[in-house]
Length: 285
Ligand code: PAF
Image 1 (cartoon, rainbow, N blue to C red):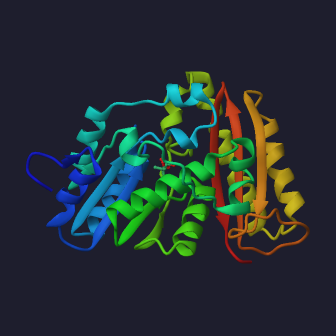
Image 2 (cartoon, rainbow, N blue to C red; image 1 turned 90 degrees about the horizontal axis):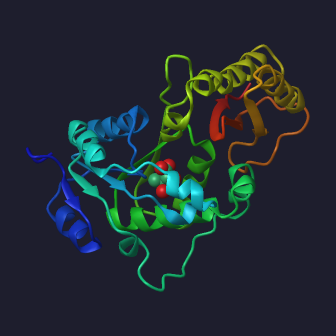
């Protein structure tokens, strides 16, 4: 990294110039800013495995289905750049909207059915927005490896699929979820939780651990695994369940009957008006 912090590229042209003389392998972490320990773990992994680390900071309007959610999204480029500098990032791509979506931009990337279930069902268009921006960013950065958090389990499935289907450059690397001491997955949304809701939010992890334990203890019926999660969640009155899912980890089709694994268990729960998601991969039995 340059001594005075990362090079900040605001345009596609500036990004090309900043990357022109950098070494390989090139690691890439796409973010929407509001960087927390979860992002830092991705940046550190990229730093450990790359000659050049590139991070993008872009609040992608196309993946928000609600204008108020987009407006409420925290933005603080100055502190995000400090985080990137501390993590040893070489180049930060922090474009304005028209650098990502030039005027008249109409092309979208639709990942198909895996983008229309779970988060995609609750937030219509979300994964078309994610798939489109990730395709553009990976195309511009041309990384050898792109790092994504396993916490957004469905997003990782979608990104792996578009990378494969569209032959995007480089490998997609999934990285373990970073958690608060009580198990709550790190997320920029956590800071919107009022103290009592923040405490209640730990129920997401408890529900996932209950499923993990049940599965490890021999419970393979998908319906029973879903019920296990719902029972834990029902004990927390502040938690309002959007969905619980026990699905095939590649197709995201809901599992029925007895399934030994592998399975992707995920849930979306609203606590104090803040929508939280988390997931757990269950190994083959
Ligand atoms: O996970 C995120 O922060 C976003 O969905 C991503 C991958 C940066 C695309 O905007």
